[in-house]
Amino acid sequence: MSEGRMQALRGTGSGSDHRQNAREPLQTGPSLYTPEEQRRRDETVWTLVQGLLAPFQFVVFLVSLVLVLRCLFTGEGAFAADLSVIAKTLTLYTIMVTGSIWEKVVFGKWLFAPAFFWEDVVSMLVIALHTVYLVMLLGKIGTVEARLTVALAAYLTYVVNAVQFVLKLRAARLQARATALPGQIAGIAA
Image (cartoon, rainbow, N blue to C red; front, side, top):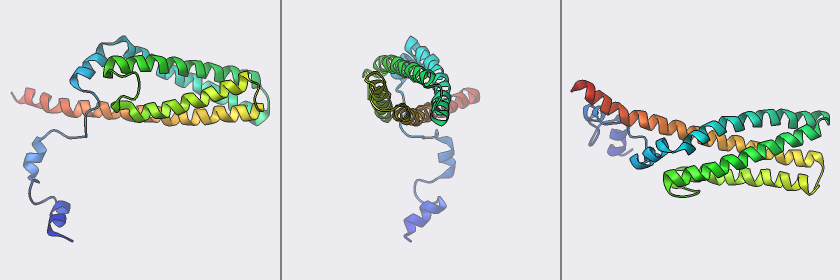
């Protein structure tokens, strides 16, 4: 093993003065929002709309998931399951339209802003699967079981997408706290 690698593992060597590093703010990667984007995010009504629609969509999802699974396991309640998936799909379309407006206001792009690129990519898959379900339902394509299986695939990708957003927003909160902390400490010491 090289001397430089050994020093890096031990935390010694050039650039690793622990006293100096302890005074520097925690670096957690590039910030999710620039100060201007954060200001626009905080000022727009679309942030509140997204904050209300996201948990509402999750509740609709949970109810629909129960109804879809009930229908698949018992063969009963297909009409209720279909209605619930339609409700979930309409809620998804609403949150996607309002989310793209939010993204335009905050980042200047309707979709695929760098900060939320991969979340938007997976969102497109979620929308595609929900739309396939609607096409199957309205076009009377396939069996009830096939249609509800597509709904379950849509729901699985929705969960993945929801986790992406939760992790991204959590990281943004942690970054905001990490960058605010040194300023707060400096204010206290002054």
